[in-house]
Image (tube, rainbow, N blue to C red):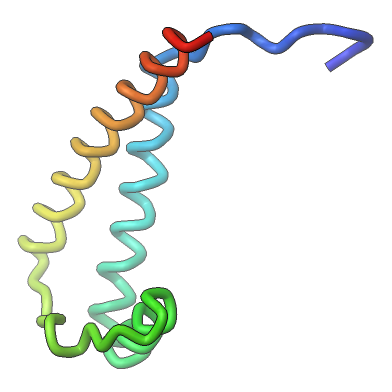
Amino acid sequence: MKGGEKMAEKLSAKRVSLSLAAVTGIISIVCAILISIAPQFTTNLFRAIFHGIDISQISKSITFSSALLGTIEIIVIALITGWLFAVIYNKIK
């Protein structure tokens, strides 16, 4: 920003929701790939992320169709969440 320019006051709900959906979709795909090629490493990684909770008791092998369905579901949730975030943010301003 140059000399005193203000940032836009409002967020574009469409841009925020699409951005969040894209990032979430990428993370979901990377996660599915990691679980497919390195299940033990991925389980250990998530155990560290969740502060020692033993997720090996609830983890299962995945199929392509379950990974695809999960990715689609999380993208839809991210679209709704991103849109709702921008709408609420714009109302608060």
